[in-house]
Length: 159
Image (cartoon, rainbow, N blue to C red; front, side):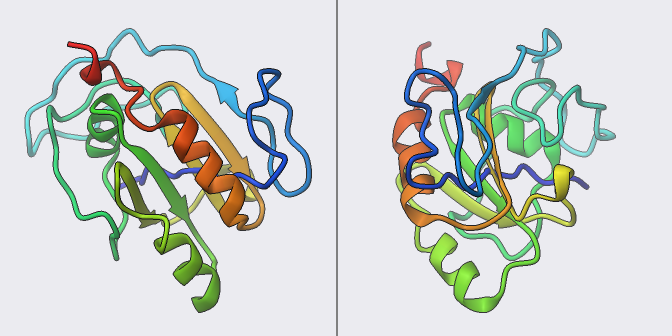
C-alpha cells in the first residue's frame, strides 16, 4: 500500500505566491484535480492514482487515524484525510532525531506517517488537497509553514 506523504517544507520554501522553492525543498505544486474523486468501500482494491502520493482521487469517506502513525497509510485513506482538510507529512529514511522532529508537528489537522518509498528520492513529502511539496531533507520551519497554509483546505471543509 502506498502512503500519503507530505513534503517537508524548508524555511524560505513556502509558497510565497509564486510556488518557488529553495534549498532542500522544491516548489509547492498545485496538482490537477482527479475527477474520479469518489468514495470507495472499505476493503475494496486500491484504485490507481494519477499522482504519487495522491492529492485527490478515489477515497474512503471520513477516515480516521492517529496523528502519528508507525505504519504507512493506504492511498484511499490518505485522499479521504486530505478531503477532510488534513495535511499529511510522509517520510522515509529519516534517522531517529529527524523522525522525532517531524512527529512533533502532528496534531491540529497534521498527520505524520512513514512511507515505504517516496518518488523523486524525497525524504519527506507534504501533501494537502491538490497540493504537494517534495523535500530531500527535513526542515521543521518549512513544514510548519506548509501545514499552516494548507490545513483545513479540503473540499470536505466547505460543505
